[in-house]
Amino acid sequence: MGAGVRCGLDVQIERGFSAWKGRRLGVLTHAAAVSGELEPILAAMSRFSLDLRVVFTPEHGLDGAAQDMQAVREPDGAGPSRVSLYGADLASLHPTAGALDEIDLLVVDLQDVGSRYYTYAVSMRYCMQACARAGAAVHVLDRPNPIDGLHMEGPLLQADLRSFVGGFEVPVRHGLTLAELARLACLEGVDVELSWTRAEGWERRMHFEQTGLSWVLPSPNMPSPATALVYPGACLVEGTTLSEGRGTTRPFELVGAPWLDGPALATELARRDLPGVRFRPADFTPTFHKHAGRSCHGVQVHVCDRDTFTPFACGVQLLHAARLQSPEDFAWRAEPYEFVCDPPAIDRLYGSARLRELLDAGREPRELAAGWRREVETFAEKRRPILLYA
Image 1 (cartoon, rainbow, N blue to C red):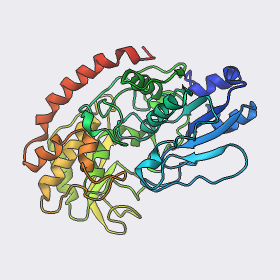
Image 2 (image 1 turned 180 degrees about the vertical axis):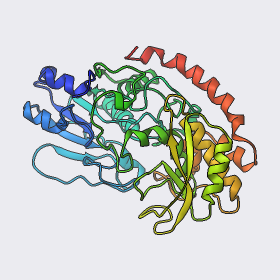
Image 3 (image 1 turned 60 degrees about the horizontal axis):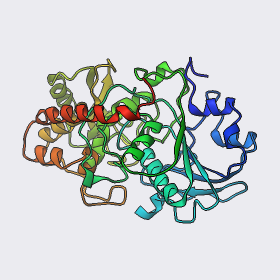
């Protein structure tokens, strides 16, 4: 059990799920939805003999084993039916019209990582919209934001660029929990009956390591809270032809490509004097994904002060430095990204075309930072009514 921190599931287990007795339930969940004693939510619900009719699973599947952009087909078997919300096309990301017919309450228990691009919150939003149409209520079992609930960074999502990697008009690092994001969805117009169970003992200043809870991989390339901390910036690499370290044991901490000069890149990034971080030249060979089987040269991102580290600015500066070093080889991702080619992946990740246009024009990325700060200040006021933790 966590040192004073109990996730929403722990609280409901202690209550014996008493408020849900006699209700027809669905659940949106995955392997990381465990109690402080590491009991999976489905096991706990079965132990209390709840009437669970259907299990919805997000990207990576119920077991969390499928790689990114890999279609998931949940197996049929005894017990509640299973419905994958990550198939082979855009339509598969949404519950079908009849999928909610047998329930009157959908329980959501997912481990988010605090970044706008992470798709679990968007799957929750799509389910909330479907529940609104079906007349079902939604209850979120809340969990800590693993990279804290204080710091916010990056631009707001441009409204016309909403997608599976950006379903909320929030900064890239948003500082919210999943239940707070659900409250934001209602504020933004999702008309559903919403309730939640808070994570008891969690404070906004806490990083995951301070909660005492055990980290369970929410997706195959999120092996630790340290990965989650660099992810708000390092995920931008997915919008390029650089490797973000998938296929290694340090995804998102390693960034490189066959054509880069790692020592020169590390020297250039050190010169930029970014707070709370150091860069070490690194060579790696991905076993799968981009540049699989090829030797890549680049850097490993080492966070030395997580309270001053600015992961989004770090990611932007890393892209700029890599492009500056090898402009003839650097390219933006052109292949489909979450089933979509246009707008480009980098625009949907960043939240607008501004980063791509600025780097293509050879300008300095620091020009964008003042705009991020203004947008974060605006969002900080907008989010006040939805906060569940002081």
